[in-house]
Length: 474
Ligand SMILES: *Cc1c(COP(=O)(O)O)cnc(C)c1O
Image (cartoon, rainbow, N blue to C red; front, side, top):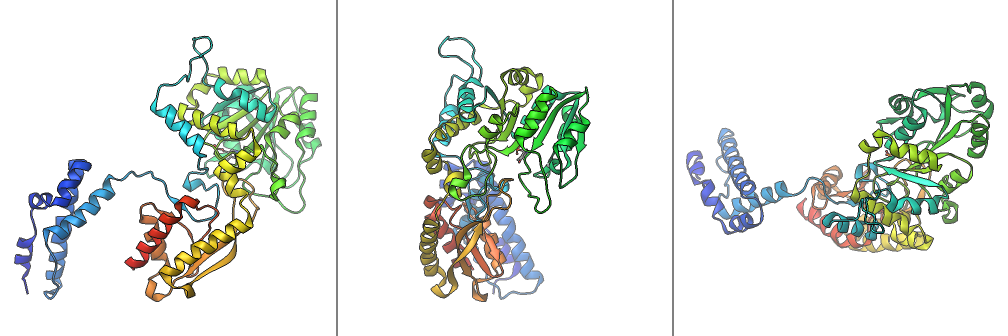
């Protein structure tokens, strides 16, 4: 048996390791410093292993110290450290708008538009008609007006910014009246009371948590009131004994008192959800038709586009908002604008929107198609784990992302029941998360659950490959 000192002497030097063909090839592709660091780290790791063996007095351990093997390990370390931190992954959770997973994946045409504008110069602020300076907002204003029926529109960085900017512009130093039932927190960092304070508007709370009537609004209107704010409680739902004032009634009272009605819809919906057997969500065009003066919503929730905050409404108000100095700090970038324009265009034809926008395709996926995709995946998983461990079971997908909080979309899940020989299910989930691409999924007791609703069809082969790799590894 080799002793401790001779094992250490057997360890290849860094230079020797770097001359291994595998690492020489890698240095052509990756930054040299990353390969060098990986080689040093690998040798250091083996030195530790040898020391540990010697301390345990376990001399029977035979360690393979061949340069070829160490080079393989160093190559894996180098590949890993050269990979981007932010990367695409497979969402098998069944949560469609998953905030931690980047909310809405873009339609192909939207992603293509983004790349084209990113790689080239563009007419971002040039009017091609006049040859003079133009506004970046002009590229999408007409589209937004057409879809929402509003007079004007402006787009900023996200919906939190849209609410903030609207309030700062029309209600700075003045009172804004909000129902207690709508003082919501969204995503842990956006709270209506805090955003109002930051905008310079003074919050006047009315009603109770579960019930607010028109007379509650009427009772607190003063000379210093600027607006009513109606907030869509998009991430929770009150059930039971509740009352809320409708947008038309609120608009009527606001206008009678010379106040504005601002409505924060949260999720931007243009299509009629009930047509697809989904619970109703207020549509942007309905709020405008009902008389709301300003309506705000996100670009990357139900709209299915890029992160953005959209404000539609009265022309004079939108023009004040645009000339607010703060608008510049919340300005939308050209990549987002390109993707947003492209996404909005898809909504001009409902069938196209449903087919091309991933969020809408997933929302409206038929039970039969989910069942047949689940069965196909199950057949392929059965080849890996054995048919007795794999089932197709009915389950629930969620909309997520602060939209349709109570909606349960029925789906079919592929359940893989792991047994002791497969290793712990938690470890399996962790290995899938650490792979390339990472796979994120649900775990229920000892079963891995895969929801085909949020797995793209062109990801299925890679998914099977990743699962196979992790199964072999255990
Ligand atoms: C999600 C949401 C927001 C915040 O929108 P972001 O685009 O995430 O900034 C604000 N208000 C409501 C009602 C929401 O649902």
